[in-house]
Length: 434
Image (cartoon, rainbow, N blue to C red; front, top):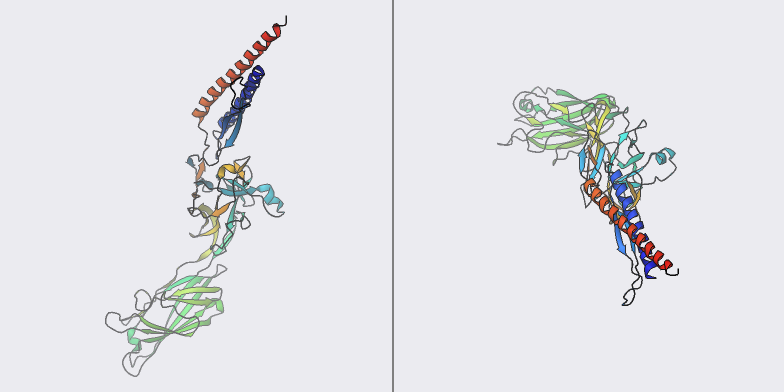
């Protein structure tokens, strides 16, 4: 029994070291694989008869292997803005291009820590192994909605339409005009003043807002009061709003806005100095300055000085590049010099990363051992942040693996020697009958 147990222990040692050799071979083979997580083999002794003072039976050894997914490799810089890596313990969500092409329901989701993503012929952002980056889509104006954090249902494949033209309509206009104070003096001729400001409509067309300022001429002194009528070319030149402006004439605040009274249209917000104008294509915030402040509408001296401009908006633009920020927002950059958010890439976290199920192409699936997932914004929580122009290198330390290779080879040879010795002893036992 004792001799045969020695033989079994030697065989167990061969199996255990062969298993360790396989992990070493896999680690070395993937030493240049981006995002690869090394595998570690551990040995555990096997006890057959517990405590005994007479004979001892060798139980041998068993081995287990575990992929150390929570280990992070160093990040290396690249020249592609959509080469992405998670600087922390989190993961990106990906699916397969085959599932995207089938479009037959919920997409299977895997996790990965890095990837070199590029747009294919259909604009889908994918890597060379067919893993497609998933993200939350932004609204047309670049804002982001509220998506569930404990579900992947809000995620969509990230698509970039390189040939798409987009409109960038004006949403803000800054109006700063000086109205001549002498026009509100008793006896003035009541001359009106006109100015125009161009803005970009929803279809990329150039539209015009026309402002007509009419002074209120009193019977004596200064009225410091003006009527401002606004018309819009996108509304066939119709008047869209009218306001009564009064200006301060006190020492220190002379010439600044005192009150703004709505005749028609939306009300003026004194805290921001903005009027939400309903133009032909929607709402444009018209800023005329706050009460008592300089920099907006003023009434000083004898000269009319029109100063007005659109604060944003451009003609029709085409996508030229994309990049990602520390918050995981994917920005589209257009040839007219503006950018907007088109997706947000969440960072996925699980309580036990090493409990994830491993798949090919450095991807992982949530399992009972890993615990439930949660979607974080990049840079928030415990997950770390997404880094563009980067990839994560393999966690394999080749020098250490070669050292492990030598010790494993010696251990394997030693177990072979045990089996040879037991075989010789069994042969001697057999010869006793002769």
